[in-house]
Length: 506
Image (cartoon, rainbow, N blue to C red; front, side):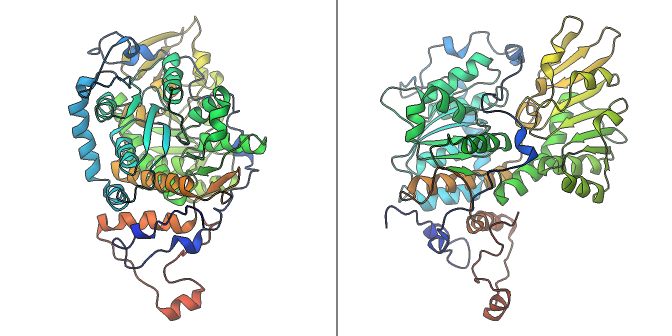
């Protein structure tokens, strides 16, 4: 009945059995609206760009000083429906996208399987994510499946200019460049949403800023959205706040808490990219260094595993006794930040909260302490408190500032407290393929769901879809799944084809 999204045709050539999504098409398991202490991260009125930024000085010295907003650029087809740093970089960006495609085989397979039926035909998706080669593969997959896309960046430092140019050359309305100002950031989002003759009916967000902007500035557009897909802790908190206040008038998909996002992107991506970002910016050696990691969620676990492997002495701060106990069992000391702030060499935040590192902490740090953030938003380190007359800011290199106290003490601040890995380095392509595939399937499901299947609430992906996404990535490892016998399946009370875990399993 209705226009159901039948994804089973996508699966038959990748795994040895048919996955029947129709068998599991009951409503996605709702995540409890009461999310506890961790939901206190930010109010809906706050954004990922709250604090002061000297973004203009972050652009490379080779870049010209003219704002992209003031340039008249057209692509080879004569279109000017974009705003990027330099459209002439498109060929370079295309090569980067092609490299990313080679390690995102599952997403490319999904594209090939589904582009015949065009399950997103008629979808008008407005997106706000990091604009990287990996995201470009997702955007072009959505277009291949029939969608029209308009895109902006969720972080003022993470855009790869050449990739944005390649997308613009391909006809995607992209508005983003590395080193945007605060005003540029919101201008780009507004240009994506506000276009005569085009109205978005789907939102793909990372951090909640796009959803916040549409909700506040374009309430009539917001009410007509068919679904929101959100992939960050911060953005999910904001959706739950809207839902709790009775103001969420469209169904939303919490991709962040899907197993294939949380256990892979958050954990493995950060495990590999934390060291990359720190070494590119500071050339620090970690053997014997004392590091405090604030937060032992999936991001914190990934960071700690990498630091420990290089011989760092790692401390953990936590508010959650379960995460704290996990840290203890993994061999880390759980402390309060005040207890170690004078002695540590590196401070890394990954909580999703605000004011985790305050001016008082910064004042007590030792000389040359490195301070950075691995959470989505720039609220975790109180950078605004450092913009005072008695402190001197010295630019060392792109994304690296020395903040100098009157007595000569220096603190090394990376990316002005914004997301370290995507601001200062790159991230592993393969693990992003997992997240991107999950996002694509969530968009397909919400867009094609018949009226009434999803209420005005926040939903989780069913475990069956999580397992499907994982199965698409197993061929890259030449992994061979064991199949249950009929007797074994009966003993466990499972369907031989899954799902193999209950929906509440995380």
